[in-house]
Length: 203
Image 1 (cartoon, rainbow, N blue to C red):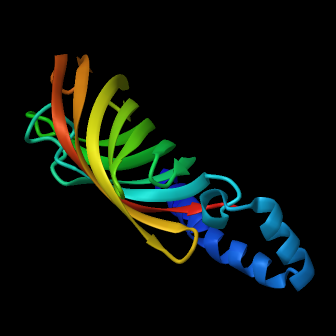
Image 2 (image 1 turned 180 degrees about the vertical axis):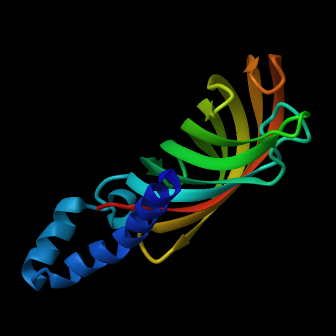
Image 3 (image 1 turned 120 degrees about the vertical axis):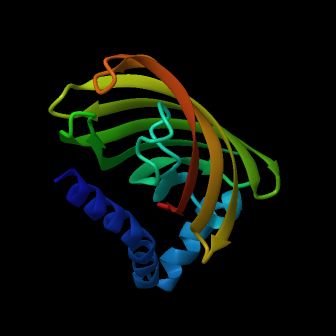
């Protein structure tokens, strides 16, 4: 069910640019001119830096062992504020599922979710540096667990159309100490993370 909801939200966000363009095309010429003048030159015609978007993330693992969750991926809808050439603040909710095998032969389905807060600053043109904080949860029949992650990443964006951005990011996340019900002990670690996605200005 979570996967279905995420896909629907992701598809909804993907439709935002076309809705905005259709609404603009339906405005009378007179009102459109007045609106453009009131918006002014801020952000090259963008009225507000509010963005909606989504990303597809690929991780090297869960961060607590090289044999756990290799090739994990997640869909993450997001909302935020992005000033081109200056900085970005995003909030996103990502999720994915994977199977965990026990030494005794038992297999468990694990639902992994992340609530991400990301703050970045542009360094050179379209290249930016971003720091992140994530609250992570994993739910399974063996036990539920939650922990914190800190991360840093580099990214670059590419503008398409007038109000849509494509971006790619690569970074590292530090997984803080937490109890692991599968290993029955406290663990910590780190992992690589790659995100590719889009962001569209709402107005």
